[in-house]
Length: 78
Image 1 (cartoon, rainbow, N blue to C red):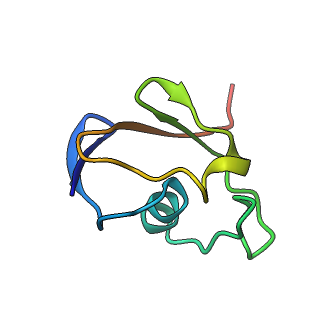
Image 2 (cartoon, one colour):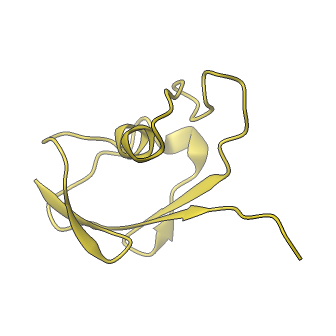
Image 3 (spheres, helix red, strand yellow):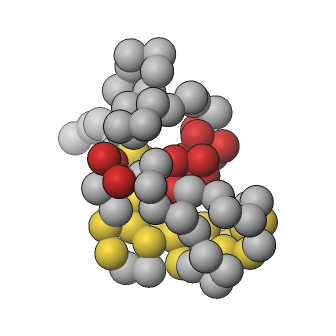
């Protein structure tokens, strides 16, 4: 199925979750609570159709055809 990821068309598997999307984009394996299994900080926030998806809900939030997803990475600096 097709979604928009950060403004660009992006194909994902039918039934894909926010967690699967984040894992695919970051290349990191995520636990059911949305935390990276390697113990390092993930530094990512996700909004689906202009609604922030809490990290604790990533695993249970299924994506749908045409969803507009923004994946934002935290950046340090001054």
